[in-house]
Length: 103
Image (cartoon, rainbow, N blue to C red; front, top):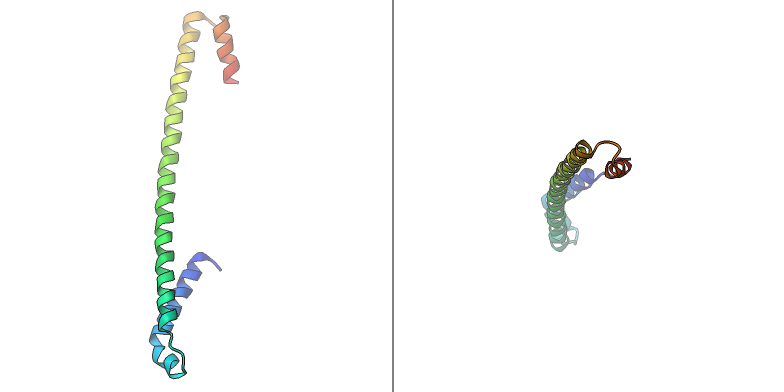
C-alpha cells in the first residue's frame, strides 16, 4: 500500500470511528482511548512527513549549492592551468604535469 493510501486510510478510520462512536459504545466497546491514540499517531506521522519534506528541500538546496561551488572552483583551477600553460608553453614540465592531472 502506498504512503498516501495509508494516510487516507487512517483519516477515514478516524472519521468512521468518530461518526459511529455511539454505536461502538452501545456494543460494549468504548473507542475513546484507541481513537485518541490513533489521532496522536496520525498527528505524529504527519509532523514527521513535514520534517522529511523540509529535509528534502534543504538537501536539494545544499546539493545545488555544492554543485555550483564545485563548478566555480573547477573553473578557477582550469583558468589557472590555462594561465600557466600560456606563460610557460606546452612543452614545460609543469604544463605536462597539468595535462596529466586533467586526464
